[in-house]
Image 1: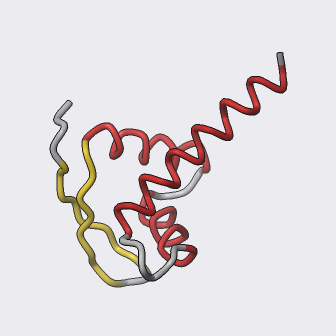
Image 2 (image 1 turned 180 degrees about the vertical axis):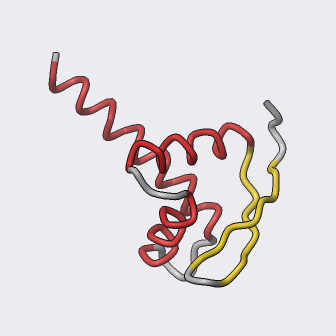
Image 3 (image 1 turned 90 degrees about the vertical axis):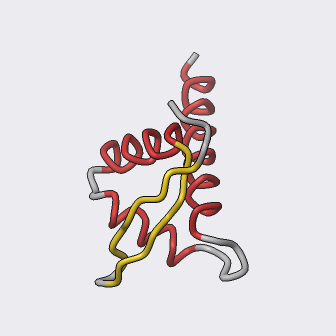
Length: 80
């Protein structure tokens, strides 16, 4: 996996945009969308709608992935 960001296109509410994320984040983002049963564009649109306008979409996606992973860890800890 590359440590450099890779730019990919997404469609948010009918509009094309590009997002640069490292391969590890793209992999985690796809897994997150699959786990939620939504297309990656839908998940990106949700994150975009909820983000602070001062924060870029790529950063918001990274934080959403991190939040998702933290929530999974907490669920595991609680079930032990």
